[in-house]
Image 1 (cartoon, rainbow over the protein chains, first blue to last red):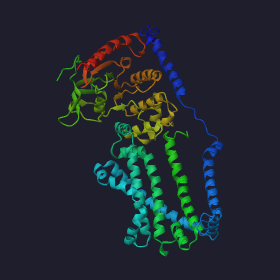
Image 2: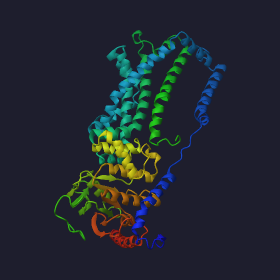
Image 3: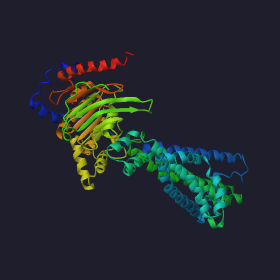
Amino acid sequence: MASTEAQQDASVKTPADAEAAPDQLAGLEAGLDALETRVKDRVPVSRVLLDKVLPPIVAIVIVLALWQLAYALELKPHYQLPSPVDVGHSLQEKWLDGTLLGYVWHSVSRGALGFAASLVIGTPLGLLVARVRFVRAAIGPILSGLQSLPSVAWVPAAIIWFGLTDSTIYAVVLLGAVPSIANGLVSGVDRIPPLYLRAGRTIGATGVAGIRHILLPAALPGYIAGLKQGWAFSWRSLMAAELIATSPDLGTGLGQLLDQARVDQDMSLVLAAILLILIVGIGIELLIFAPIERRVLRSRGLLANAR
Amino acid sequence: MTATLTQKPVDKNGAGTYAARFDHVSKSFGRPGAQQLVLDDITLDVAPGEFVCLLGASGCGKSTLLNLVAGLDKPTGGSIDVPGGRPALMFQEHALFPWLTAGKNIELALRMRGVPRAERRDEAERLLELVRLKGAYGKRVHELSGGMRQRVAMARALAQDSRLLLMDEPFAALDAITRDVLHDELTRIWRETNLSVLFVTHNVREAVRLAQRVVLMSSRPGRIAREWDVEMPQPRRIEDAAVADLSVEITEQLRGEIRRHGQH
């Protein structure tokens, strides 16, 4: 460094210099802080609409156009492939006779209850697998294996165990969702940077305090990803169970509606039911999980494109 | 076992005379039979209020040594005594928790120390003011610059109210201008709080700029090779001629230590 020449006499500081230094230091530091702090820019609403809302609308319009085209060309007979308008009519009919929301509510409330139960079981299970080596070795592989087992495979077994009751449906939902939630937490814990755990131990956050203040919050992003997947699995398993386990005792959810439409050979209603199942699945993801996830990631500065 | 060079006379009066005492500390890693000696016969006292820099090249076991003092690991041989209880530790990375604001990071350390809820907020604000980050209480970690993060980390370390502050190359990842400013800041805080500091670095100038005593370690295994008392008054500047002169001398020694490893 050549700067030594300029500071040749720096070692013979007077006491006055030393007194003046703190003020200068404070100013220097304030300047550095100001220079290095990023200025946030707000994205205008019109831009958000253009970037986020327009593309899916375009995609939906294209799909509907292709569907209408297939209908017009009569690729399949009309009773097998009804037009988008026919499906719209079926939906409208169910809406007008007041049963549509009943089907949706029946399934959603079941799905929500099943998901809540999965959460209560999956969370401590995931924590055990993540933190206790013996438990991980014992059931870790089974738990991740269970995720690749389609939960519809449990339906026959559940019917034999529980009969055509709500228990059957909840059993299938739990077997589908618990492994995802537990696995999400496990991978969330596995991906915690070791530095956080060290820093936690240094400030005395060990044992239960360590789990509560360091481990769980640090694992939250992975845990939320697991919850999202858990919901998808709950919903999927629920539909599989409703579709197969149909009985007057079980009431009518979207799965039963779908099966009833198949029995009646009502293709527009079949497509309408599929559409409803899809819309509910996407709707819950968009309205509940996406905002939570965005909030968590943004608060940690992990969301690059949306500052 | 080899004796350490220029060992300072040790005061045998017991507690109160040191903030940390290393008594023939050694540390090996690996299974019995295939052990690797990382630290060999480290004997060192850090006096209360003293600022000591541990200096060494890669593989000198500096970080291992800090882990031992911090209680994150146990020595294989010898003993370490830290009478003031759990020391505070600052890392090269800020290690602030991104799910908490700057202020809440500090409050978590206060809470773990048992400070009642009602006092935490004020105490956190006071510590932020000490590192000159008044107004940063509600800021998220990613909203702060590198230098600001290390100052919050310093405030969090101070929140532990330990008499001994361990620093593991805390400024190595910062740009030169910020590092220079943080050197001034650390010196100021050290003098205001009268803490004992054990500061690990591989930067000779930094060591001479900051420390009252520079301890040079050799590598593989880590041993204490030599010590220097730095008697220039604080605040020093990293550009000071006297700092440069001593740095040249220490660098020569350090290079000699490193060269030994290329000779076989």
